[in-house]
Image (cartoon, rainbow, N blue to C red; front, side, top):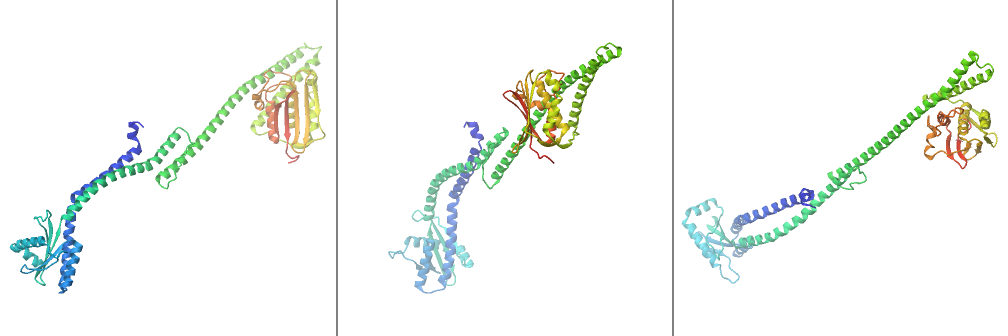
Length: 501
C-alpha cells in the first residue's frame, strides 16, 4: 500500500484517531494524578484524622477505665497510623501510648511540646479552638527524620483537656513515589494495549465497510455476482442487506431490460426482413399481374378486331386461364388480409382426410403431367378428422403446389396419411429435390419469404402460400414442421386434438 492510500485508508484513520484519543486520555489522567495526588491524599488524611479524633473524644468521655482508654487510643492509632496524646489544661501529659519496648516516642512528645508552647503563646488559636469545640489540623513546617507531620488538636472541654493526634507524611511521600513509578510502567503497557486495541477496533469497523465498498464498486461495473455476506444486527448489517437487495433488483431490472432490448432488436430485424419481403412480394405480385393483364388485354383486342378468327377458342381459353390465375392471386391476398385482421373464421366439420387429399391432387393433374412427375399416395384407410374442409384443402393445395414447384422434371412426390394411437394423425408431403438450407427452415413460414427467388408463373411463387398454411394450422391447433430427407424435403402436419370439439 503506497503512502497516499495509507493516508486515505479508513482503517488507518480509525486506528490513528482511536489511538490518539486513548493516549491523550491516559496521558491527561496520569499528569492529573501526578500533579494532584499528593494534595488529595494529604487532604483526605487530614479529614480522616480530624474525623477520627472527634469520634475518639466521644468514646473517651464515656469511660474512666484506663484500660478502655488505652484500647480506644490503640484502635485509633491502628486505623489512622497516628499517635494520640492527651494533655490536661495545664499542659501536663495525661495519656500516651508506648512503643513495644516500653519507651515513649520522645521525638513526638518533644514536637508536641513545641507545638503546645506555640499554641500557648498564640492565645487566639486556643481560644478559637475552645470556643468552637472543634478540631484544628495543621501540617508542621519542621521535619522529624526529614519528614513533615500532620497534627490535629481538639479541645475536650468536658474534662478540661486537649487531645492531640500526630501522623507522619512519610507514607504519603512513599505512596506518591511508588505510584509515579508504577504509572510509568503502566503508561508504557497502556500505550501498547491501546495500539493493539485500536488496530483491532479499526479493523472491526473498517472491514465490513471495505466489503461494502468492494460490492458497491462491482455494482457500479454492473457485476451483480458478488454479495456483501455481512451478518450483523446493526446499521452496517442493514446497509449490507439493503445493498444486496439493491444489487438483486438492479440485476433483475437490467436482465429484463436486456431481454426487452434483445426482443426489440429481433422485432426490428424481423420488421426489416418483413419489409424486404413485402417489397419482393409487391414485385412478385406486380409481375404476376402484369403478364396476365397484358395477355388478356392483347388477346381481347385481337378478338375484337377479328385478328384471331382461326384460333379464336384457343385465345379465349388463354384469357380465361390468365383471369383464373389473377383470381387465385387475389384470393390468396384476401386470405392473407383476413388472417392479419383476425376475421379468419373456421367452419369445422367431420370428414375423411384421404378424400380431401385425393380431391386436391386431381386439380394438379395437368401440372404433374407437364413435369412428368410420379405422385405416390399412401393411406392406411379412412381417417376421420374434425376441421374446416375448405381451409384444410387450401393447406394441402399449397403444400402440393410447393412440392411440384421444387421437384425437378421426372421427380417423385409422396403424399401419405399415417394414423397412430399414441402420437396422433400425420399428413406427409415429401418431394425429391434440393434441401432447404438449415438457416432458412424457420423463415419459410414467414410472409413473403421465398427460398427460390425465381418466378414460375404457372405455380405462382409469391411467398405467401406457406404463411397461409401456418396460420390455418395454428387456428386449428395442429403442429407442423419441415425436414430435409435423403431424397429431398418433407412437410408434415400432426393432428393430436379430439375428432370433435
